Image (cartoon, rainbow, N blue to C red; front, top):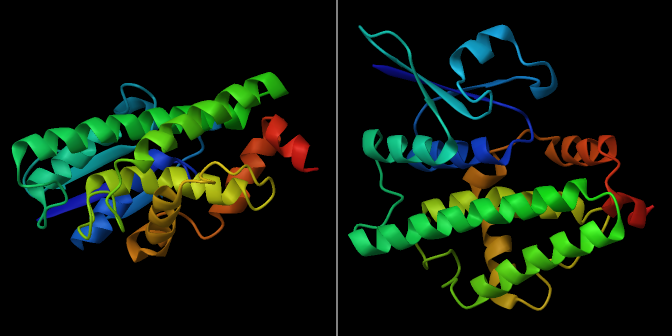
Length: 223
């Protein structure tokens, strides 16, 4: 028997990837949230990079094992739990991994948008995000990334869209405006049970409070 515990921060988009995957695969797991501004010693002792997510794997008869970095956690889950979220074809699988990395770049742009201190920084971040979504408009098959079958690429982009959904409740930015396929994909992911259940119920308020704490320029425009 194997016990899985994800260690995370409540608004971390990267742990949401693993939560979505586990829920899609119907695998039992626990989540432990920590405060990244005050990391407990026990966490620093097991997280070489001091970052979340961390997956603690407890197998019967073995010492607990730590797996870190979200992409690595997803690959471990794919190899050890039932149900496939990667394509069967090796080349298609490689393409999906490429778009997963692209999704991480989108999250980086969204982070820059969330911490922009002035209009110039905000404009640059918004342009970076919309440019990447414009590329995806020609790639997304619909309703999910590769068609009817939910994949890890969907699990990776869903947390990014969740951040945008939260942001646009107070500061409509139109980041997917004029992109019907991306907008439909965003809506399909938001409706997916595994996606809806992948973050705390108060995620939007927690995320917006984090932006307020960072004096995000995007929220000043909405005031």
